[in-house]
Length: 314
Length: 265
Image 1: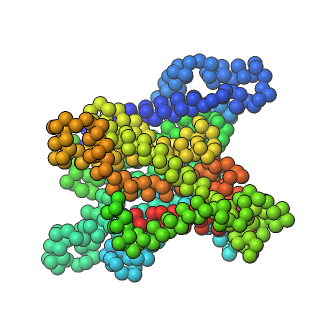
Image 2: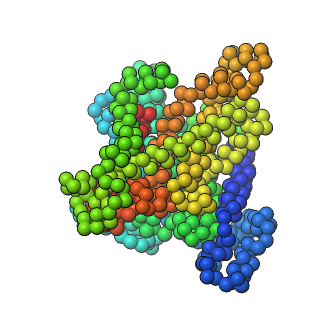
Image 3: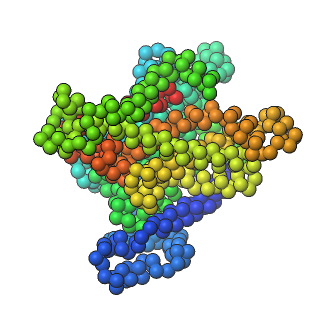
C-alpha cells in the first residue's frame, strides 16, 4: 500500500512538470511587452529596461523557466510583478479561505445530497423520487453566479439582509466566520449536491437490484440494515468518483464566488492577477491549484480500496 | 442517426427536452424577426424601467430593451456553444482516433498531454488561455474548445479501443484496407453514440462557461449582448431594478435545463 502511494505520488511529478511548462510558456507567448503592460505606455525606456532586468525578462525564456522552477522546487515562487510581495506566502494565506469555502460547500452538499439520493433510490418512480430528480436537475442547471446574484437579491428585497463584507478567520471569531461563509458555501455547493444526488440515486438502484441484497433481505435483515450496512457501502464507489470530479468544479467555482462575495481567497487572487497581468502570481497560483487538484484525485483513488477491500493496489 | 432520433422521440422526456432545444435555436436564428428592438438600441428616457407592454422584460441602465438583448444573447450563447464544442469535439475526435487506433508511442504522448490539461479545473484553464489571448468572443470560443478537448479525446479513445476488437475490423485489416479508411469507414460511425451524448453535455457546459467568463468580464465584451455580461452589469442596479437580473438569469437556467434534461433524467 505504502509503495503504491509512493508510486502514485511520483507519477504526479511529470503531470505537475507538464502543468508548469504549459503555464509558464503560454504566459510568455502573449503578444507585446510585459514591462510595457505593467508600467503603461508613457513609461521611460530606462524604467522599462530596469523592470525587465528586475524580473529577468531580458533573458532567454528557457533560462527564465529554469530560474523559476528551481525556485519553486525549494518553495520560492518568486515575487509579484505588481506588488513585489512574495508569491507563496500570499497563496498560502489566501488558500486557507478557499479551502474552508470548498470544504464547507462540499460537506453541505453531501449532507443534503446523499440522504435525498438514497430516498429517491429506495422510493423509485414515486412522487418523492421525481421531486428529488427535478431538484438535482435544477441544482446542476443553475450556474453558481446566477444563483448567487438572485439569492443576494431575494435576501435583500425580502429580509433587507446583505451578506457581511470582509473576512474573519475561523479561529478569531467562529460564528462571524460561518456567517460570512454560509451563503457562498450554499451557492457553491448546489451544483455538487445536484450531481451527487443523481449519482447516489442511480448507484443505490444498481446495488439494490443485485443478488446479495436479495439474499440479505431473504435472511430477514431489517431494511434499515440492508440500506446502510450493505447497499450504501457498495454504492459509495461511483459516488466518491463524482465527488472527486466535483472538487475540481468547486475549486474553479471559487474564482466566481469569491469575486461576488468579496472573499479574499485564492480564486480572487487568480482573477486579480490575470486582470493585472501579474505573471509570477498567475503561474504560481495556478500551479498550486493544479497541485491541490491532483492530490485530491489521488486521495479519492486511495479511498476506493478502503471502501471496497476487493480493490487492492500493488 | 435515424435510430438515435427514433429513440429520442419515443421517449416523452426526451421529446420535451428536444422541443426546448429547438425553441432556443429558433429564438436565436430568428432573433432579428422576433426581437422588437436592436440589442444596442438605447431609449435614453426609459432607463431602468420595469416590464411593460412596450418593454416586455423592462429596460437596463442605458434604456436598452432586456427582452431583445436576451434574444440576441441566445445567438451569442449558441454560437459560442457550437463553435467551442466543435473545436473540442473535432480535436478530441482526431486525437482520440489516433490514440485509440494506433496506440503505442502516439497514444502515450497524446494521453500524457491530456493528463496535464486534466490537472486544471476547467474554468481556470479557460481563464489562463484568455489571459494569454485577451478577452473577446473569438478567444472565449477557442479557450472553451481547448478546455473540452481532453474529455472528448479520452471518450473517443476508449470507444475506439472497444470497437477495434470487433471481427469486422480484424477482417478489414487482414485484407489490407488502409488504416485511414478503416478509421473513417468502420470505426468512426460506430463510436458516434457516446460521442453525440457528450456533445450535448459539452454544449451546456460551454454555454455555462461562456456566461461565467463574461460575468467575470473576461469573455464577451460589452456592448455585445451576452447573458453573463447582462447579469454582471445588472448587479449594480438589482435592488431597485430586479428585472435586470431575473430575466437573464432565467434565460441561462432554462437553456441549460433543456439541454441537459433529456441526457440525465
